[in-house]
Length: 170
Image 1: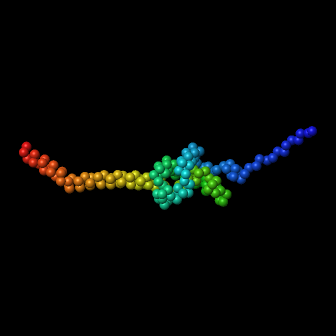
Image 2: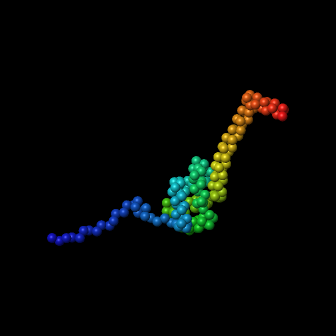
């Protein structure tokens, strides 16, 4: 009885597993890419949707918590130029958006928007201003009701007349 060696089969790799192992092109700093990637995952909004929302001032997408997360990861001009040079230096048609690192894609899409950081800060200010306006309107309403109460309350008028009468005798 001879023992035959079992046939060695090539490992079967599904197309999805091969696609998952495909490395992404990264042009930005590794630490910056990691930090931005964490924040982008936390926001759970694609970079293209974020850039469209910034261009259109979409307040449904850019709510206060998202704006607060965006401020520290907004790209600088130097970062944008680095990523732009890298992306535009690649041959056209070879890569699509899924082949880029999410951080680089975010930097590129947001970096092309003129005044991107100022847009985010202005939306933050607008939200803070709106909150302050609501609080001030509550205070104005409170003082208006107090004024109306003092103006129309008969007991308060009698109290004041008694005070005036006492003041005359002193």
